[in-house]
Image (cartoon, rainbow over all chains, first blue to last red; front, side):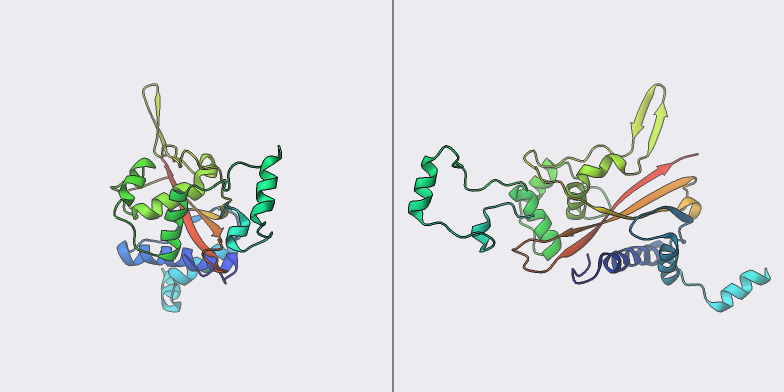
Length: 67
Length: 174
């Protein structure tokens, strides 16, 4: 649940990011593959939220680019 | 979500004097019941426990059983019960898992039940649908999960509005 003072998008972000984060903590859940459908948020926003949970460091990015 | 008489909450409308009520009751248009509940008290209580985080009564399992809330799932029964209530009217549109054995189709999620006297339909809003795909171990193909939000506000919860996230998931094997 989120505080009712938040906007719908802010509240949804809080709950969803928390949920994804709990999955990472519990069993190292990998990032989801792709957005199947948009609703309150678009693809760009969903990916931005996912970036906050499965943040990729600059070093990791460079390693991926080298490999 | 409150569906009782508005004057009882000090809300809109004014309390009529007893004499006026008695006169009104004589007319053919008078209502014979003081309160018509669109949301059964049991469902209201469950939503309030969930939002307020208050202690559950000892007999709450009886209510869960009546709603056929599973007791062997990972999420708490309260969260499942709330999801059943809020998502009831859109459950047909949620992702579903199905398998075929012989000439029979088996569905992963059976129809959620609500209280037999429930009249109030909530309006959860879709946030997004993601596909976990192969990122979930031992699962392959489409693995969809939808996220919804639902805003609930009642006088008893004062001006605070709470939001809950409900989910519907499905796995469609290739």
